Length: 328
Image (tube, rainbow, N blue to C red; front, side, top):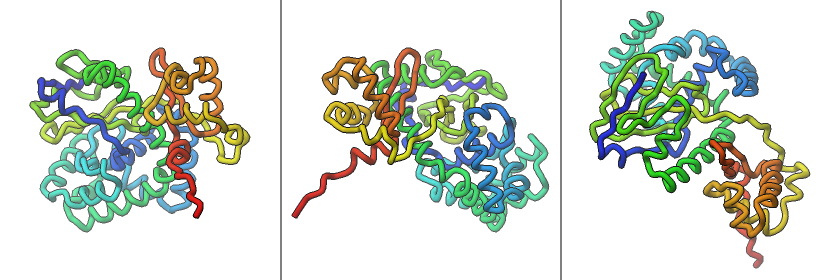
């Protein structure tokens, strides 16, 4: 069991990452390659990833260089998932490269004790070896994560909308209470169970960064070193659906003020009732229009408890961002 102990100040310092954390997504996607757990939720990604790795000639690099550093069921070094990863892949990889050699040596030794990592891992304290690691991580991301970034962003957009609603209606504590089935808010403690080890983390005014993750499955993950800025990576709920193409017939039906109003309501996330109120129609009519928008690939719908929340897909957001042409 993992428990984060909050003080009064910590509740004011809970943050949610607004962008995918590139390095964490690399780490937990490598975990997905090591197990069949949750394979149904990643079936299409797994198929595409294996093909992409073969095509890029990265099969052996992943097997012998990356997987030993990211064991699924055990410790892996904290320096591989630096906080700078929330600023994008380049910033995260620069932070990995800039990690002090002494820290790398210490964390690699912990890895060796925990899972018996290969002897070559001792050389990661050398900048040249770490550059090889950064190059491998970049190539892996380009092959198997970058092609899915639009879908990942769509799911994170829905999660941000869910948090916004929770904060508005129930405050920070209400949001903490709705993170997932394995996370419980028992004031003043955020409890994660089951968890691989028993640990208590005193936040002591540092707050907590919540990082929603597409590739994290079932069990949240925290940094091993309690002295680092506190982080909790937690899984998004999976409801896979196949995207529709721009030229599909449902998109051609997307005309009129009612659907435009419902689409605009989806910018910040809306329930069917809220969409109906924005468009001035009945909930039944709004439900029909959200279905058309969803089939056209412009909206996504996610069920949370007894509520269905509608949010924009990247295509829907791009459509709203289009400026009308000015004729000269």
